[in-house]
Image (cartoon, rainbow, N blue to C red):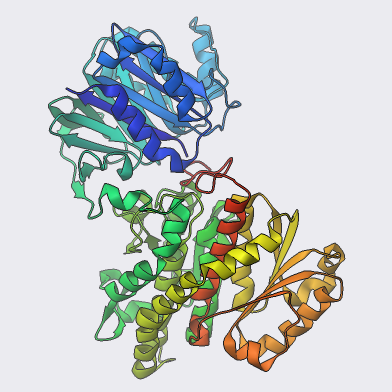
Length: 610
């Protein structure tokens, strides 16, 4: 949620701030604002899209000379979207932008009211800004004031700060939220994420929590709360700004779906050696993998749905019990954990607040943690005992697609590795499946992408629906949960996923004449049972879209209005082309409705608050 950008240097700051905020739009936002140094701090902000902020700035032409400032896109958590609640917040002495949640903001506000402060917004951020002003007014030292303020804050934050007395300087600090710092030949930048700085540099620092970054046009320095200057590890990305742009596709989401074959192939190849899964993790060697008696997969949203696929394949291949936990519930239900358990954390960004909290809870209970994330150096990646990176490259659309597919890829490889070390699978069997995962899966997904027109035609048949249902059995039921989420995320059509065998236990009452039902059938062992479920909804007048394999479609006469047959593939690996069909279906429904596919309402790419 929320996007932060800041620049100080020799160039005009407004174009850099607006360009950076535009790059960060994928994080989700409902208002935007900037504060720049120009005869004191000048703040301009607006509810709505960036275009409205740009209109306001056009009337403030004198600000074009500014060379230092901060910008923000806000996703409302405290207070409705409005000009007044937009960031930056502050006083005549300072301006502050914030990503995160200040949990004790009401206590801070009450204290500040006693000191004579007044408040004009409903946000938690204004409390942090005015608390900083309180300390700065006393000391006149920005660093001392910042650290005294941080000591009083409870919650999570990434902060970008400008002081009126220091017109060429930006301060930045983080806790449980993403923030990067970068240096360029013309100045220095802060940002919430790498894409916002890629037009300027591909190297950056990700400051440790509690370390204060001080940016000037010709230098970047880092300080501990003790005042000691420290060094931070510089990182480099191997993808460029072109990879974070649409590349000729009408939307990022469609581009990223088309990148799935490459992402799957690269991720699979990166973790194979001599045709077998190979992770090269010191703390997860063969002996340690044999010890695990149970696995807990903890994640949110789409990543949690990838975990359901992981559960299915790990239990099938390894006979190790797996639970899939919603991260926001995990620590609060006091889970039963054992030192011989493994907790796997799935997160695309590596900054998901609930997943990070679950990680820390597991570690506090002495359980080994394995992170599967897409962002190198992210908080979840750094704090987990072991980490595996999904090589998806940048994913810009809010609705995750290729990140899901590569998370599933790594979970398959992990299942194969566990099955091998536990003696459940032979090396020959594992090699055969690995080769199919590396070659056959990307080819099958590519075949699906070549038949986009068929999926679009199917979308045209359901685009006007108010309600839809997805049904499946076995691993297909897990796939349906993600398919349903994709549809509701970006098309705003109410949809639900159900195990087909549960229909008769209540849900069938919701199926009336013309109700669209997507029936997924790729598991041959339950295909006949699935056929019964399809007939049940057909007899109630449902409009059925059946997605199935060639083998099942030839063996059974499936009563459906629309048939989409998947490319031939080993049944174990059918979830990969199947989910690609489902992602495309959701995409085309949203596009046909004329909606903002990449930035659906009320959603953010990285949920960095609980």
